Image 1 (cartoon, rainbow, N blue to C red):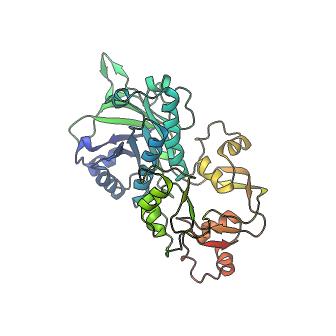
Image 2 (cartoon, rainbow, N blue to C red):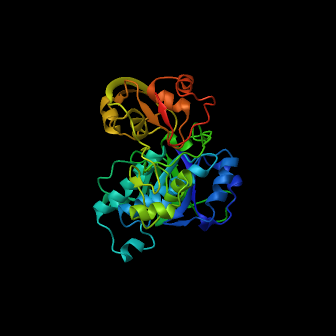
Image 3 (cartoon, helix red, strand yellow):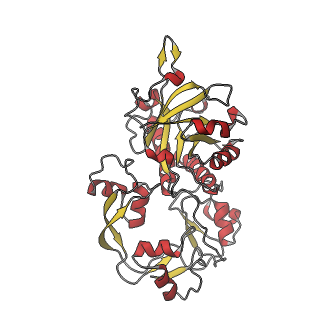
Length: 388
């Protein structure tokens, strides 16, 4: 089955989302062009949420290297996480319609693929379905061999020298080659007096309305800041500094960083004035374990792998999955990963809950609360060390 939806940006102005909504299955909104936020994205997302429509976000990328790609991706994740209902997917738009890449020394094809990988992995690490957008020429040339993420392909069939537009069948030549097919730039919908980019989606992830609302936030108290901090998905220096009570500029100076956004997941930062407790410590070695996991809406193999201390490639191999992007809610996966087998400690990360931590270690939040003298299971904070 194919689902239909337009991709929209500030170019369409104050487009009537509520009138368009009954005619489509989903929306795709531009959120950034490089570092410039789309002026209409907040408005458009708000209206889509009010209409109960799932949506995705894309960034028109100006990245010329992987450092700039990580900066772009962190910015997108931070915005996505700010919405009351999160997007169903995030995408990097890898075209060069305005010639920016060409004017600034077109990166090599390998660098272009590395840029896509850097952004897509950050999207996945934040729990989002990741995609890459490009036209068929780019997929055949610049991005040839990039199979790590699902494709959003731009290809506009014509008849008699004109685009077929709304008459394009969803069973066209791209139906089996991508997750989303942008089939025209001359689509029409009631409620907008102009052309629209229209798309067919062939996978249920675009309809992800379950499990994509922001979780109830952990009530955070101010921890004593550690001497080091391991960057997590969605972090930027300003949020890290606010969390730890340290000026982000002091963190930047201590680590030789020029921009509050140019950091990457897993990077270890020195925190000025911190104590000796590392926020990523653990007291025991890992032992192997085997279990099963039932895929939930919004899951990705890489996200599941991170929960169990393994890799998405290993889970795919253990379950006979040829395309790591093709998993579905309700699917039961065999997990041959690792988890701590003896008494250990766990350092709370931003977004953690006791119930979520308990699930990782095969226990209950009540047991964790009792073991750590926690009277209110909602009162945990990043940097807090829990006995498991």
